[in-house]
Length: 156
Image: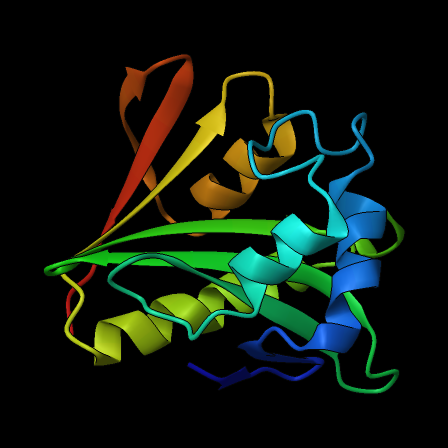
């Protein structure tokens, strides 16, 4: 899966992305709301460089078009016509609209692929993520294992 926005490209991970990915993913304060963190270079390499499979769940790199730098990542997992998504923007690029821009494009792409429902989870204390989901018209569904689940019904 490859996506393009005004400022970003979304593509599968490459070897050169691993170290910048580790720089923000292993920042435990910044990543307090994430589960995929604190791993070794080899562990990230195994997870990120395998052939992407949306059915198994895949992590994608968010690349800034002007600088060609990794600024974040997306997670997408398909379960029939329901898709689970996740997103992370590095601290240096946070609060600049990148997550809204990229997730909006992802939603449009998934809708074009036949998605009926898109879901995302956020800890109740992750106010920025919850605000983003609400801005994208997701609605609160339930709480599972301390994570609030939000849902967007897609009509195309």
